[in-house]
Image (tube, rainbow, N blue to C red; front, side, top):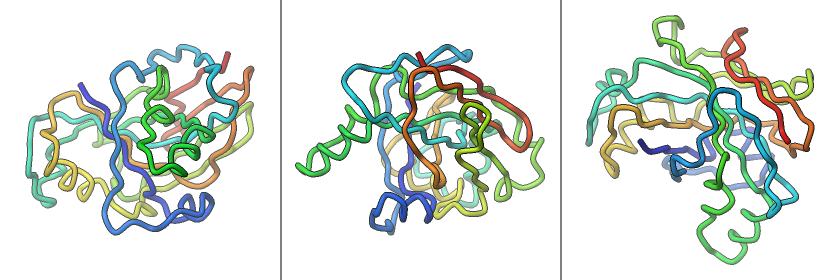
Length: 203
């Protein structure tokens, strides 16, 4: 199982980080050791003073494929869920300034908390799913898949040119605006529509 993540996929988030808008999906990877399941607590690492939360919709690949055409991409996932792409923003900025890869800022242990999944049949339209993140009971991020720069089918078709997608692979599809620093003691709750699918604490 591999974790494929898409960066810069919501315009407002690109603006808040003052990044350049991409012409193609921005792709990076996380190892399976980044996964944090079953609402287990996230232990804040000592190597960063500025871990940011990034709530994202997650696709679970249901069949193997490569060089997938966009019109068939919907056949390659049957479930959608929610997760957090934790980012060590201080380490990321340091790496970017030097023109270096920034895996250490994105792929560290526990950097991908993953909530429950739901069948896509539960949602009338994949391009109109609301989701949000609350921290300590306060709304921090709100998104809707209609605002994706690169929709699900485009992501799957693009990624499958480079990586064979296998059953169980996860695709984190990008975060909306509102990212920010987490602190020890915070409680994070993530929702698809009004259903809470992820609930954990920072320790």
